[in-house]
Length: 295
Image 1 (tube, one colour):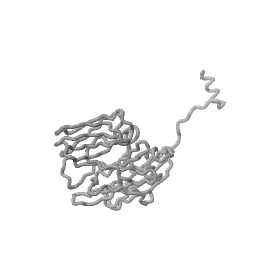
Image 2 (image 1 turned 135 degrees about the vertical axis):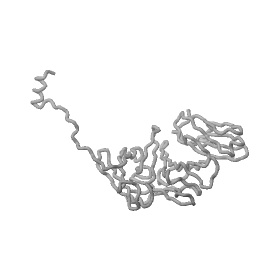
Image 3 (image 1 turned 90 degrees about the vertical axis):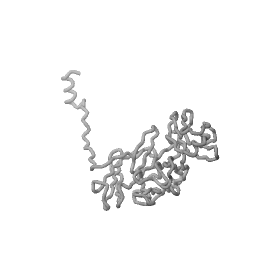
Image 4 (image 1 turned 180 degrees about the vertical axis):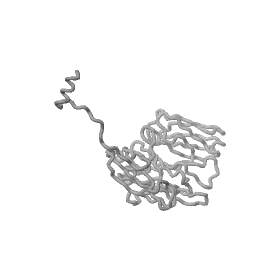
């Protein structure tokens, strides 16, 4: 287009030049940001969640953590505060395992326990150690009303400095996993456990699905990924039989391991998505069972 034609069209309003976005940016006070997932609530909405401490730091008995939740247009949809009391950053972090294997870390959830915004606090107990241990978790809405709770099995605790749970959804079934759990009086080498709960789709009540005594990594493998089972001292000293069984009863893998074998690995290629039971049956009669979730 020649310059004279260009300016003529511009003068008569027949040609416009796109303007840069003049909308003023949203300025958020010094905060930590996370994304509240779009995958759980059913309305395909995601949210920005900003958190900050009233005093600018986590310590202080009169301190509180302040939440500001914005929609995709950065309109404020919810704000609330949570007193911290004498504890250090006591809100439980929720690690959501996404469909593509990535993870998001959120202090606030939506659509996991209900369609409200929720936060989780640990229930702690001092069992004679130098710090408190977590014996369970309580789920609250933004009004501070408890909506459900997760209680660890008797004698199992999570270190308060971990204070984290994982969430994953497989074929519409939702699971909560509490890792890095231990028993204070357990002196064996295999003294860390992951406890898995299944979330009831109707009531959102938590039901225990698994207490994992056999160390397995990863516990939520993708199809085609290699899984390693680490045997405890009692089983590996005598030998065992390892079985991997699908939820429909099919035996996917069966292996006889001789005495002294410390680990066993298998690949999940050809495994349909879902839950599988891994059993290690010792030759002296001791059997342990754990579960994996193939994504």
